[in-house]
Image 1: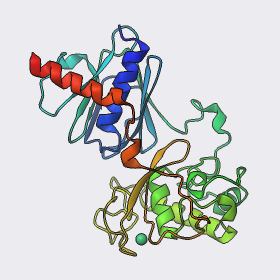
Image 2: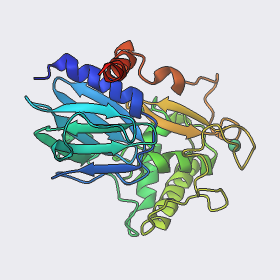
Image 3: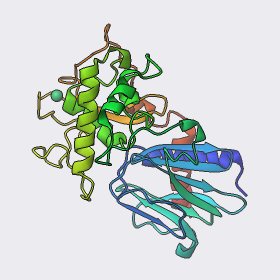
Image 4: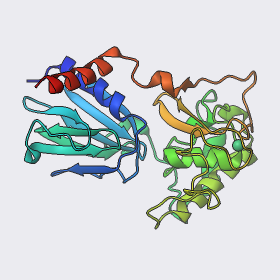
Length: 298
Ligand SMILES: [Zn+2]
């Protein structure tokens, strides 16, 4: 029977193996709720008691509860599993690891901004995917944002301002408008707020019926910054960075060379370089190496 610390170590191991990785396959038997889209990346893995949550960058959260019987295993692709396949409730595959949840009685997903799960989220802003949405209303909500110290990068993700913008569009919209992600929302002029909203609406609507997101057709892959960390920005040639941002510590891709609009002064970057923030807890790597050692021994 798994105790909280087992789940904690499992979460640390899953974090080490999955965070920042693209999901090539997601399978879940008898899943309640929406599945993450193919190509989504894992943003966070968290445990609370026997609850384990995996957050994907498209806003889908996978919640598993282990009760007496459940467990998470990590395997390399092609490696033999220690339990039978029909016992697998969730399979998450990336290039390097396959994470399998066996026998968990509770497996469900929900959207990050689902109000029924997050009653504190408050009233949702106009839905940008709806062509009748009042975009000036969204711009006004952004301009008069209730926390003037919030960053623009966090504020445009706040579904009370406008609904529909997830992490991919956040990164792409900020780049398209040339805005520094850590700009204080109170320093962003009204015209820029409107520009951000119009850009977000245009990008979202252009992708409504497309399985592959394209916001920058001239860039190979179709996205200007998202997923392009370490590569050259097509606008200025600087190197695109990947950092964690905000309370939710979501992954942010941005270009320090040309996203200088409303740049905070003195320049302050609250970000943690991603290399340091991926699972600082040693239990994660210990757990992974224990698994590997026990398998070599057997
Ligand atoms: Zn640039």
